[in-house]
Image: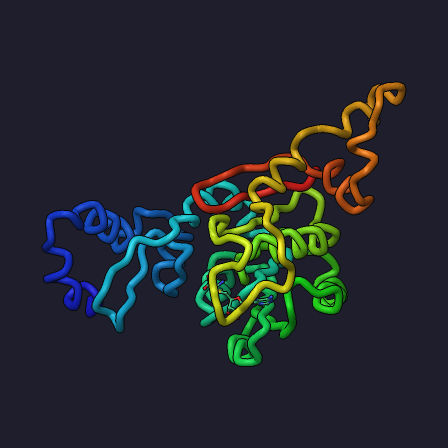
Length: 257
Ligand SMILES: C[S@@+](CC[C@H](N)C(=O)[O-])C[C@H]1O[C@@H](n2cnc3c(N)ncnc32)[C@H](O)[C@@H]1O
């Protein structure tokens, strides 16, 4: 394989042994179908990524083996998947190949993302934090079983999109927020945040899991002061959240079935 030939010298370095083993597992198809597909398409969600025009191998997020663990049993189902943030379309192509009956909807600010519209991949140009984009996705999908936020990574944007898009997450579906570590300003100077928030999304979602609703559900005579102060949209999220799984770098939230 051309890629491997280019990487031969690089990979000979002893400290890259772990990478070499992972590359072998990927090439031999032993790293899981989703990680292999992600590596082939070149998304940084995979365990490894070829960069620098084919000369450099990088360790990347390694989210896909976790997603396969959670979503693998739904692989042949028919559903809509929404991904906020398309970049070069690599993850959209990966989802299309991994889920043979799903409709894949990519959302991006950048008009250039239209080029990724092909087959079962549909593109919506818009801001992932805006009501208008949400309304368009709601009309086009009628609800999605998997929603991933891989857009600006700014904490405020992550929160705003989550509170908007939760409404069209299907019962039993999964909402994924990636790259939790990026901060108030997000990851990309070219895509400044639409919503400023100093609270990490990881803390925000932890707050949502504190069962403040319990008293109002089970013991109405107990003071529900804290829960009652939350906006109605957030109270609804707390009532509907089923589980919340942290993996290194990301969080996956499931809606009650
Ligand atoms: C990390 S890249 C997406 C990578 C892609 N999901 C993948 O795994 O291959 C982030 C993308 O988010 C887009 N973006 C940034 N802020 C956005 C926003 N507020 N709304 C929609 N898209 C946004 C950028 O244009 C960029 O293409």
